[in-house]
Structure formats: C-alpha cells, structure tokens
Image (cartoon, rainbow, N blue to C red; front, side, top):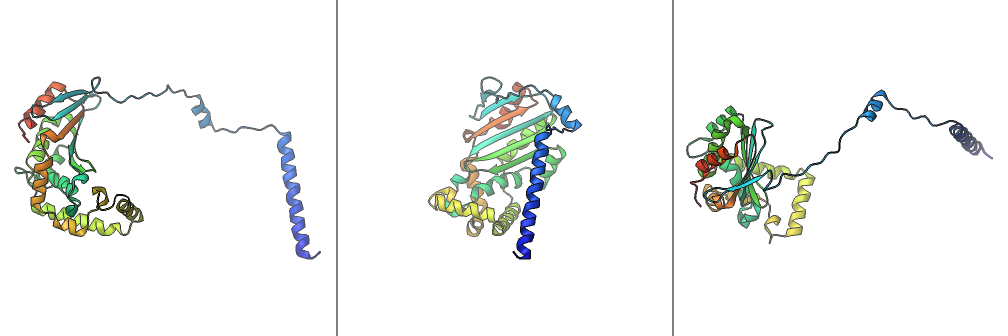
Length: 269
C-alpha cells in the first residue's frame, strides 16, 4: 500500500468517526428551536383575513352616458383629494397600416406632446406642471389610453385641458421630428438588448407579416409617418363614439358629469 492510498484511507476513517459522533450527539440531545426576539413578537401578531372584491358596475360604480355617446364609469372615493380619469379609445397597434407600423404609438404621443390649437406644447407642459397634474396618452395593441391624474381641487381646469388635447391637437411638426428621432434611436438600441430581440423575432415567427402583431416599427415605416397621417388617424379613431372614460377619486358625481358634458358633450363624430 503506497503513501497516497494510506492517506486517503485515513481521511475517510476520520470523516466517518466525526459523522458518527455528531449523529450520536444529535440522537441524545433534544432539538432546540432558536428564535429571535423579533420573531417572537411577530408570532404573537394576529391579522384579520383580507378580502377584496373589485368595485362592480351597478353597485359602487355608476354607468352614465353623455349626450354624444361617451360612456362614463364613475367611482367616487373621498379618501384622498385626488382624481384619476382614464379613457380607452379603440384604435391601437392592431389598426396600423402595414407600411406605417408604429403609427398608433406616434399618434398617441403627439396628440399630447404636440400641443393644441390654442396651447403650444411648452405652455401645455408648464400649465400641467403648475397644477401638479399628469396628462398622458399611450398606445396598446387594441386601444389608446389617455390618463389624467391631478389634485381634485384642479378638476375643472384639468378636464378642460383634457378636452382641448383630445378635440383640438395641433400635431406640432417640431415635436413630431423629436419623437421620430427618439423612436429611431430606440430601434437602434434594441439590437443591444437580447430580450427585446427575442420578443421581436418571436412575434415575427408566431404572427408572420400577415398579422399586425407580427409587424414591428422599422426605420422606413417611422420615416414615412407624416403630420397628415397623424391628422387622419385622429379623425378616424379619436371620436366620442369610440371612447369610454372611467373616473375614480374625490368628486361629486353630478358635478363631474355636468363638467364632462360641458367640456366633451358638444364633440361630434
């Protein structure tokens, strides 16, 4: 038996003796549960079970319709002095023409960022900031989403700004070029993101170019989008018969409905 074999055998023997000794000690001693003082206090706490049921239309949520067909869902909650107004407009990415993939996204951003006929883009930003309000539009697969969030004491001014943005967007040419530049840079950066590339390739393989969800914005499609395209998109999709609004927060139902009727009720398709 050489020296290496003897050394390995000795190591195995010692390990076995140590393991056997530890096992014998564990069998002879009662297990001790060790808990910190904080864990002890937490163990004494008792919490009632939590139950949550989403507000239901016809119960907490009231459904109304403005004179021009805009559907309202109203959920007053005076807990905090805030108002959240969310609208859905049918007309998202699924409605993009194939040669202008990305149109819905560009249009949604420019309805807000391009200012209105009466308020320049920077002036609109400044006024919303002075109200501590947020007014944004975004495009999903099936709809545009418009969201207004503000302190309830500024509800009247906020709703009037919302109406101005939806009804009278200016589609400022300079803002359109800024948005186009940002989107083109996003396209370039996607090549550095494996996850983004995976989503893009999966959509192309799964949906193919025969389905809108298989079409991704490209440099040619983004460069082809003009101000006239945005105006046509707005005229086609941003209409009262294509809009639902939901309000939640600190408001009186009758007062808010009257304000929305005054601001949006004369809007026709």
